[in-house]
Image (cartoon, rainbow, N blue to C red; front, side, top):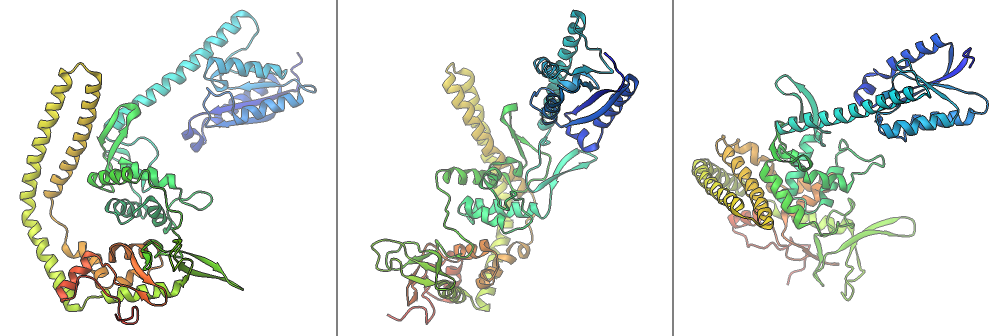
Length: 516
């Protein structure tokens, strides 16, 4: 074959994303292949770079593009395909054979500065032997990588992508470790703790809370996925616990800083299980924050809301959709029903003297709590000792049992007990620390109790929903053309009213409901 100005194509591949990011690997392969082409007198007409693709795969974007190019021009030219090394073509014997055949079917020849390809038995034997070695190296590298990752996870370090709220950094005493990434970490912490405490009654509400922050990651369509929220609720990493069941790792204490306590994580799991079969509400919308809180006084069912088209524009209304109710389909203007609600909040506003008295009462209780801290720690230690006895007894039963069913049940029981033990360890650790400053902890709560209308005036949908949830218990009945009836106020405001000498329930201010 006449090699003078023979057309050649270079194929380069790296599977390591670090090599892709650093720009190494592909350049050196291409340089070596070009040097080989010059020495052979070949003219390089195309170069194909395969980035971040394993050598086990047959279907690779750049490989398919190269084969398509060769097939398209095979009637006019016979090309030389140059690879730096046999492992760049494939790292699997079957894949190597298929690619060799695919290249051969286009009429092209395969060459390399590292190996001489031939059709005789010895050349084919050496070629397949080297392909087998390359496949073995790939499997061995993968095995070693998994073992190293598992060992590092056992030592308390997460070894995969950092979840939302964390990022990786290098620290001298740890190496690569996750650290909280602000402001996302604080947003995630508030959201998860809110879900655990019941502030967010559903994953839908939590999703809308996250959507209220522009920095929270979104899909290309600008939305926060339900699956993202669901996955976050199940991540023990936020409580500094590593769970990798496929590697046999369960509840490994992690080295990174937790965003929530383990107790909060367990409360979230209980919430998730309790709501696992509850359908996500589709009727929540930022334009109607009282939907689901305001009820029809006639049928005692929650009102819905929506936009109604007028002659020239759309108008927002709340209305009852319960068939058979005499208020069915009769609308109430959004401005009216939410304006009356703001007046209700104004009636909750305690006097300055009552707010100060309540503040002093709570502060005294806080001081008493500091005194009881040591007593609580002793009780928790006793509870942990009892828990250790139960774990030991369960282990004895497992060892003495020949029934696989009983053994499995015992193992599951021990896992549950170990989780309870982790919660106790966390509580005992808290008892050994100094309580935070009372003013720092309760400032926001007392600001809300002193003036709930301030939070209601927020532009955030989640804040408005929080006000309705914290200020009242259950549905707030509303009569069309009249106003709110007696509203079931929440316990903190009921306590303030008791201090002030008022009745337990709150009747709407004058002008909201006619006298009876």
